[in-house]
Structures are given as structure tokens and as C-alpha cells.
Amino acid sequence: MEAQKKKTGLLFGSFNPIHNGHLILANYMAEFTDLDEVWFVVSPQNPLKQKSSLLADYHRLALARLAVEDHHKLKVSNIEFNMPKPSYTIDTLTWLDEEYPNREFIVICGTDIFGSFHKWKNYNEILNQYKLYVYPRPGYGLDKYINHTSVKLYNAPLMEISSSFIRKAIKLKKGMDYWMPAKVYDYIIEMHFYEK
Image (cartoon, rainbow, N blue to C red; front, side, top):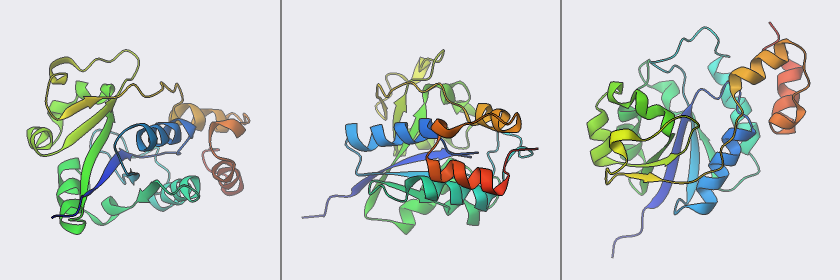
């Protein structure tokens, strides 16, 4: 009998910086779905986003690793750092399948991505070959993908926290102690990230 593949959820993002909203979502997906683990895939460059406001890749990776170092079901991956830029989800999934044949990879995403999902490279292939675990984002619906067999909707808690809000607040010298793990915040302050 073939061994059961480990179900691994992938949460893609710049994590600029990682915050409690990301962690609560990942924790929810790891504990309240059939996933065995959730990996934060730190993206060096999102093809649909401007790169200028991004903290250096290795700093965002270090912050993400700090955030999950004590959690056995949450991991951080820098897989996309060694891939051609910009990184496309389908290429990352293909590479991960080859690298980890004992895992089944599932894409975790918010309903907000479906507005631009048709612009993703080989989006039909993603829908046909992989499962998507989708969580609600305020003001966004699933539209035409709601009944797709690969798409599963989970009622994860809605977190109104954004990395851009945190970056602006730090620039304005506001205390953001409770918005991210203490280790992450301490590192940001110590390194003077986002102050300019």
C-alpha cells in the first residue's frame, strides 16, 4: 500500500513584514482543515506587484523564520529565491512536486486573488492539477470558481491587518507591539526596518 502523502498548504506572499494576521490564518488552516503543515513561501518578487517597497528578500525570510520557529506545523520556504524571477506559482508547484514526491501541495489563497486569477501563468493547469483552499477576504467573492472541484472554501477568521499599514505605522514611529510576534517586532526595531 502506498504511504499517505503529507498534505502541505502553501501560503505565498512577500510577508513584508509577516504579521499576526498571516500567522492566525496559517494556524487556522493547519488546525481546522485536513492539512498536516502550512508553509509560508516567501516570494522574492510578485509579478503583479511593484518591487520598490520590498525589504530585502533575506530579511523578510529571517523575520518569517523567527515568527514560526516554535511551531511544529508551520514552516518557511525560500524555494522561490533560487528560481527565475519573477516567480510564478505554477513553476514553484512543479518544482516542489519534483523535490518532495511524498507531499501533496495545496495552494492557500484569499477570495481577493480571484479577481486577477485568470492573469496567472497557466491558471487552468493550477485549477486542474492542484487543490485551492480559499479563505474569505472582505468585499471579494469567488465568482465563477465557486463550484470548481479543486476549490474548497474555508471560513477562516477575517483579519483586518495589512503589512502596508504596519510599514506606514512604523515610519510614523507608532508602537506596533501586538501586531506581530515580539521576536519579529524586536528585530524590525533593532534593524531600523521600515523607518524611512
